[in-house]
Length: 292
Ligand SMILES: Cc1cc2nc3c(=O)[nH]c(=O)nc-3n(C[C@H](O)[C@H](O)[C@H](O)COP(=O)(O)OP(=O)(O)OC[C@H]3O[C@@H](n4cnc5c(N)ncnc54)[C@H](O)[C@@H]3O)c2cc1C
Image 1: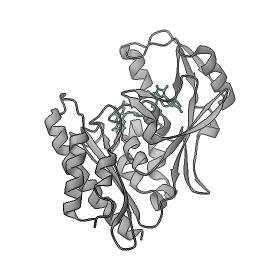
Image 2 (image 1 turned 135 degrees about the vertical axis):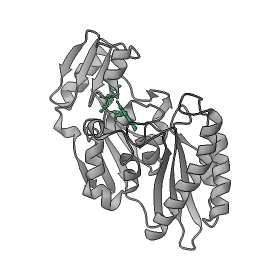
Image 3 (image 1 turned 60 degrees about the horizontal axis):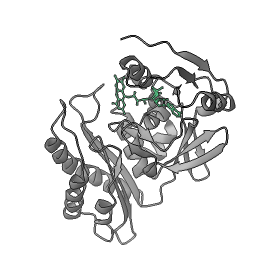
């Protein structure tokens, strides 16, 4: 497999990147870590004449605290996210995903922005970020906008991002007291194996120990990371126990829309969704109690 002839543009600033993007859109892609897009170009899944490298734009790096949560620069690598003391202390459910992704060689170059923007249905960060109410910021030459992750994905490898927009940051709000989240995934082996099925859960407990809010998000079993509102709603007002989690899991597995492939049949994946939903809810509940 060879790369086709492509003109590579190196942008030193975000302002430059969005101008170059706008001038070549739609015949252009951004290049971050390259772990997805270079494969896509080699296999012919993506055919564009221009690549805009953003890897020299320092403004897109860094993990920091904001007034109301966490900012992850789009160029943050999976390894950097995984090793961040701030994430470990206050946003640790993200580590459920980063700890399972790929192998060190990939994790050291693959970026968080690329993991989201590529919109591959099996990507690990979108479900847990969605369960944690994250949003992304999109910049273009004409302005910027903020999009909640739950409305960002529209199909496999398709998002609401326009061709002339750069995803600059991911914002995760500070969790209120009594909130816990968790991500559970199944893959055929550890390391360099994508998820066969995955579920993220976010659970907010009332002071009387019933569920005030719940978010259940499916990964790798639908065209997009799917927020199953009805499964979360089933838990609201309930005591967070095994029966309630089982009822929510039954709703979640019916909302899955999996494919059959060499990693597993659609029926197997649906079964996994039931198990993983209960597992994610149980861990999220434990963490929610600790955060009360
Ligand atoms: C061997 C291997 C194993 C893998 N295992 C896993 C795994 O276990 N879990 C998992 O989730 N993923 C896995 N991946 C997928 C991949 O590493 C991730 O999706 C990665 O995070 C993509 O980031 P990148 O920086 O490499 O993106 P790139 O390849 O540079 O870009 C990917 C796409 O996103 C666009 N893009 C990138 N950055 C931006 C931005 N800031 N704004 C707008 N658009 C942007 C690009 O134009 C391109 O279309 C694996 C990949 C490989 C090769």
